[in-house]
Amino acid sequence: MTERWKHRAADRPHMVQVAITSLLLAFTVGGIFLTRTVSAEEPLVLWPGLVLSVVACAALLRRRSHPLLVLLVTTACVMTEGWLLGYLLTPLLMGPMLVAQYTVSLRLERRTTWYSALAAAAGIALAGFIGTDSPHEWIIGLVNPAAWVLMVASFGSYVRVRREYAFARAEHAAQEREEEARRRVIQERMRIARELHDVVAHHLALANAQAGTAAHLARAHPEQAIAMIEKLPEVTASALRELKATVGLLRQDTDSQELAPAPGLEQLPQLVATCASAGLDVSVTTEGRPQRLPPGLDLTAYRIVQEALTNITKHAATPSARVRLEYTCHYLTLTITNDSGSRPMTAPGRSHGFGLLGMRERALSAGGTFHAGPRSGGGFEVACSLPLPSSEESTS
Image 1 (cartoon, rainbow, N blue to C red):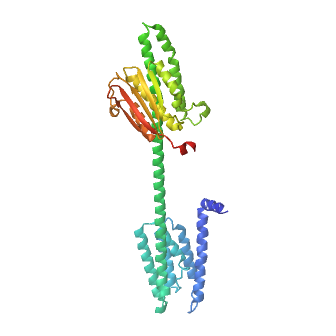
Image 2: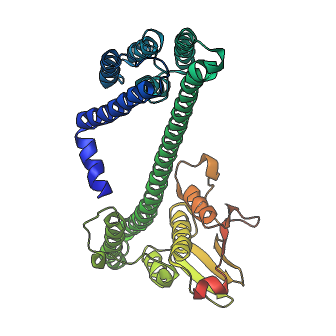
Image 3: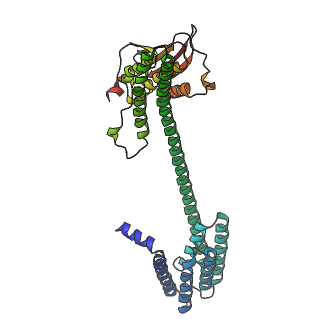
């Protein structure tokens, strides 16, 4: 029922304002009758007070668009009732003026609020001073009305400050959410770009190596050239499958059954076979007890090995590589080496490609370490250590 009335009030703001003003008028008229009843002197004139109350309450209908003007009108009405008509300025009689003062405090700046409040309090105090005959009645006729005006002004200023503070907090929270969303989008773009680079660079490098080797053997050994060309569709088909799986993550309407699972170290034999078809001899050794890795860590390890072998295919003069996987209690260490005869390679910071940079970002994002550079005895080495999950995490 409460929500229903809230919706009705939001749909009919003018009717709500008229209803509140009518209720305030009823309280103000009640204050007039109360003042007339408790008056010790001759009965006060009734109809001028009723007219002034109606005028003051009617002016409140414009308090949001003209707050200062409405405060001036209501203050003049209350001062007339206290000064000329001799009414006792009670909070009921001052209701329209107090509402106008609250609106000014709520909608205008602090300096304007307090200037208007002090002026209204001074006017009410003057009217109470003139309309009060006995000094013993000054507290009721002078101090009490001015205190009500200042108290309402203070309360309105407090509400305004609280609203500004809540609005500032909401705006700050919205900015933080927007920045967080922007940061997540950038990270997702970098992740997708890294995946696409790894897939495309690896398979295109192998296809290019196969095509170059086939062209070299075409005249002297046509049978070997034809056999190597026949293996090219396997490389391109594998590239298309991984590209479909990676790009399919961006499509919301893609059926998950159509997407291939993310590759991992279980696909390392297929990777070695693909490299062998391009003329790269790869040997794999495993030390320690192999563990089942989480999907993210498994993908990171596979991509680092894949990119390192791709770089050897493109840059190394000797078509051979060694991959060593060392499992310990807390780390998986990957070492990919090309023994000798590698061509000079630029440092990762000055490289025109993104291979070494992508491997470094993958290792660091997984909480590991990464090193790549020439070996002292010749060749090139890529080494990284990836932290393994604890036994509690792996079983959970």
